Length: 131
Image (cartoon, rainbow, N blue to C red; front, side):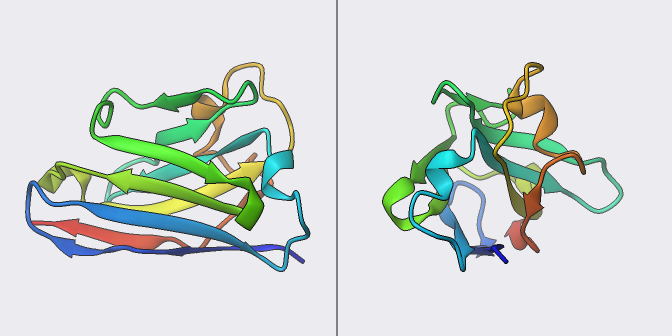
């Protein structure tokens, strides 16, 4: 069974950068390329989940307004890995970050769905703390 494993979280000062990775452990070649909705969401203590960045079914990257121009998502199909580059981090970016993927095409848009339990696969999360 495929498991999503996140890595790269940590503690940084405001203005710093991190690179998160999400590896599809146990997956066959071509797995990530077949995920038409792949992305990241986050959840801070006491707050609702927030879709952060996705690669949608048309290959487009879409971002929440709160992270636009600071975060960059990329998908490495050859290595079945999803990345999220976090730049110019702010204290309000502090949260647990999760990756989630699904082979279905969501007509409402992947960014609207990525944080929901509807997604087929989700990792255990990696903590990002910005001070």
